[in-house]
Length: 126
Image 1: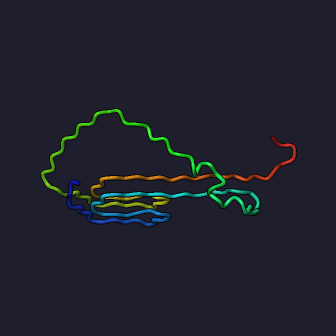
Image 2: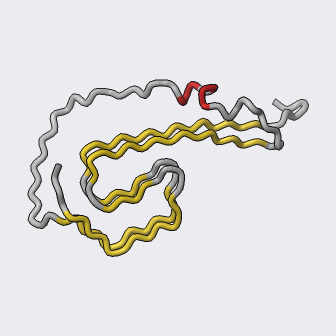
Image 3: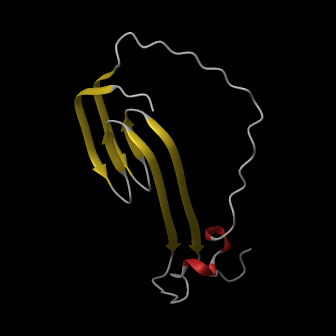
């Protein structure tokens, strides 16, 4: 793996949550994974079965990876082996987000979210 120095003068991240990563420098492997249930309801009623990820196929279905059939030719010339950044300013990072300044060999990310809206039945409305 190509190795370079990462130089960042200033990093300002206000909030990083839910499996977020801030990394300055090289990494060989980055694996990010996050699952979430987002429930929005009009009435405060809790269903004890809704908190189980196995109840929703979205969390177990295989992700289709399409083959890449393009030939790629890359030629690089680094006069100075330095990744130089002046300022990085981020308000918020969430749900498996990564701020990475450096080289990575393998990166794999997966986030699965099930959104559920529970609205109260209104008589006569469709």
